[in-house]
Length: 442
Image (cartoon, rainbow, N blue to C red; front, side, top):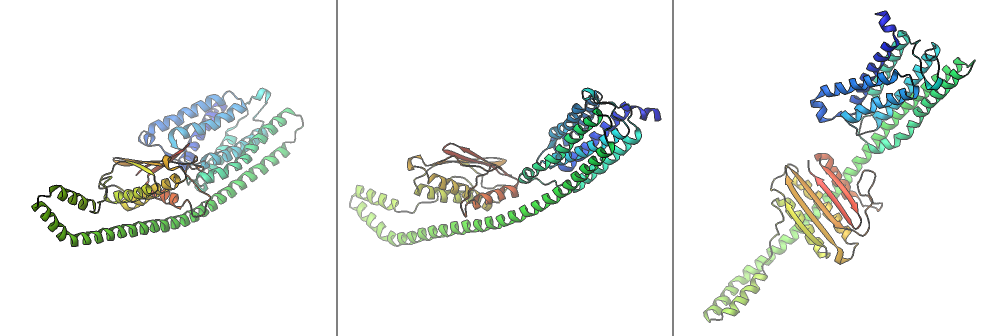
């Protein structure tokens, strides 16, 4: 057994197996496995095994730079195949882990002359000892455990972008270790003590920055949460304002219809008497004209765009607003009477989207103003609203429209709040002279 563990190839193989397992731990800590691989976990196991075998084969070449690249790929390949990569922190933390790991391996290797030469970038494993291997593996396990426990796992693309500059430190550390190591092997009388001290300092700095990075990311998450809560309150207030405004308008319309109906009921007896007289006297044509005029005075009913009463009312109201502003509206909607989401919330979302489309159309010439609304239901509701616009709408890094004008953008945030609450999907498409939004309800 001792002879078996003393064999450098055995230690390399064991190291690569442990490395693949630690990569698996990091992956599971920061990312959700894809549905397919949740069902077929044996494939995940095989992917990690194949990655570990490939890494062992490459490491056996003994080329330092290729070893480094292979180590990075052995982490990234299973990650992007088996997991949903929705944040960058798992990768950022891995680079820190890699930098500290390389420092430790280099110091131990130089201290025991584990790297005999660097001619042509070649690495020799002849002096690799089981004791050194055990130290490295123990340190790796502890480091991965710490990263898994304290590392921030929340999905936040803005935070990921702000953390990327911190990658410069571990990358610079790796470069220093490699080039300083080459210098150590290429010179006589190189001070190993100074090299070791430098490595210890670099490890301390990397660990310190990693801790500060974690604290900073958590403070940013807290700040973003507070900001989002504030925006949600603003969106709720705007939602209530829109709902109240729509309700007042509907009440006003209803009262107007009721007044017209009372007035017409009051006049109906006189009209019927007049119609009877005209018919009795044989004035058929005059009776028909009188009847047509009366029918034209009848209040019009609500136009039916879809089967869902709540959504139909919202669409009807904003279509009327659009037509008052000389906007041509085309509607094709097959929305059932009952949906799997809150109909009032969805009606407010659609109202927001149509209202945004109306505002965009107001900035183009009247003969170019148009809004197209298409809705189809098949277990989920797919809605597309397309409108003309004066200029190409600018989208933010998340792919959402934004405005620097005061009190603008609250409606959009209200829509995004609905999307998050209902696990729906939305996509904004900005084209020349045209803006589209597609929404798939959860």
